[in-house]
Length: 155
Image (cartoon, rainbow, N blue to C red):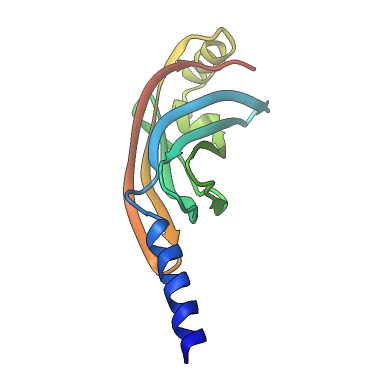
């Protein structure tokens, strides 16, 4: 009986010393680049940067993230489930495949102009909108991701 009480006290102390004060905080986009381009599509690789101030990790996943370029919804993506490191900053990679015709509405002149803008590093307005899902044991929390930035794409 005494042994069980000691084990219970030790486990309780360990659990109480590990804090989960807040969900991991979204900081911004760490990097963004075109990793592949074909006649019909281009692929953007981006890293979503987060900070976890908690003593425990958990998992994080970006869900149903709508990607907007110049206010046009061009793609919806999900990240893999990511193991969150404790008390550190970390990146979640996202690969977004974007069809050129979605960006430039099947207008061949606009399509050619759009390709030239991307190649020439002209700035575009990039937005992400969706949900971040954070899990730690039975604790589960969804919070919105809304991010906007003017960027130039580089290959």
